[in-house]
Length: 237
Image 1 (cartoon, rainbow, N blue to C red):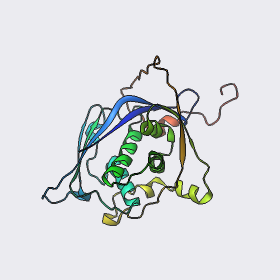
Image 2: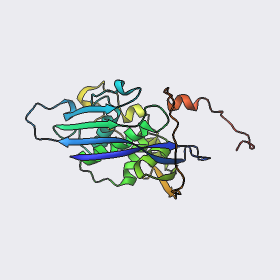
Image 3: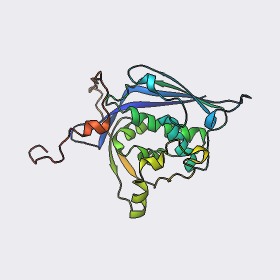
Image 4: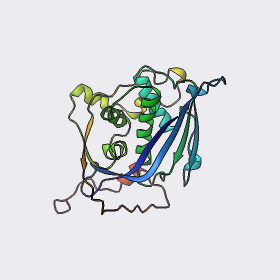
């Protein structure tokens, strides 16, 4: 059995808007098995089960073509000439991260999906290369870098040449196609450029503890960003 654990994260720490993130102690856990069952294979050779608490858990789609985590894993696999999961792959998701509450639940799912693709595909990707795959999907590096590397990190996007920049900015719908095209959907996805983002790990004093105040309502990242002004005065900065 393969066990994957990814922490939640809080980003935009202090003045580090879209730059700093810190991993916290709530986790998304995956238990992955590839069996030799004689049963007919499931769609894309993968079955999903889910265990989680809180609002939104009942809405988790467990079809591998529609679940974010497995779509990310399939993207990684297909970039490496593997169209489906290994036959009879089962993934049990145990999620302790509140969904849509500002603790990086989607970032954790993206990181877990990239790690899942790397593990079942036996790709031996480095963490830095896995970050490239994460940043093709989750375009801001703060949450995914904290979830991938752990600890308190500062992140930035690298200066890419025009060709790589065009590839990095391909619309998300072309990176993770919606399941409308049958077996050929996403067969040749855009391979990430190398070195899209970088990170620095900062020291974190053990005396400093994090307390997360979790709202009882869901707010998407896009909606939360809409309340921010387009410009700030020098005094505010």
